[in-house]
Image 1 (cartoon, rainbow, N blue to C red):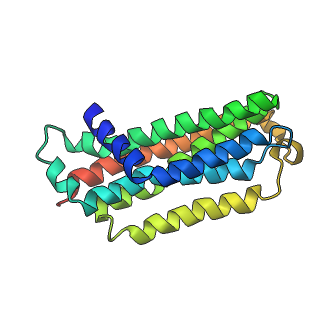
Image 2: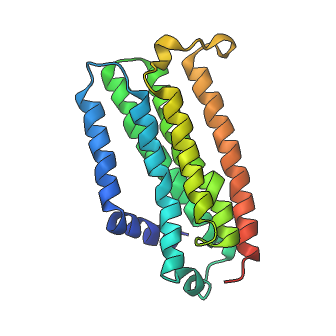
Amino acid sequence: MRGLLRKDFYLLFKTYKFMLIIVAAYFAVALASLDASPNYMLYFATGSLIGILPTGIYMGDEGSRWTEYSLTLPYSRAALASSKYVMTLINGAVFAAAFASIELLRRSGAGSAALVFSLVFTAAIMQTALSMPFLYAFGAANARVVYIAVYLLIFGVGMSFFMGTNLLENYNFGALSSPVTASLLVLAAAFAVFMLSWVIGIICYKRRSF
């Protein structure tokens, strides 16, 4: 697994360098606006952008025929399928923690930091969760429409909800008690969907004929 992840992260920094620069620019903008209210729309957009990286790398794997070559390596199909899910979790956790730390510097409190972590992490993992089983089952070329539709759905729904909204000020958490509690529930739901997708993805990859 470690070798597969090294290959994926090498491709990430080699092929998607420009997207990492965009994420770094978003981080710089958020860091430079500590005096302003938290921009949750920017955080969600960043998470959505991070989320397409593992699926994009898999599409590159198919385009270079790595998927066929990898079957000759001493890795099980479950490990090959799991590598993109593990990469997704690493990316989501690292970037979510980085952007949540901005809210701690802003001194917005634990509620704002928890919301930011939840937004970035959820947006980052849902792209893989909703599209990877289709990519594994039908191939990147056949499932490209699904991949694009999932990204547009996640991005569009998120942007329409967060545009011009300050969650801490305008949202009534009601029975959820606090933004921290709400964030934990969102993370738990997203993680449950992600783990279910992981199981389905492995099954699809094992049944796939390359």
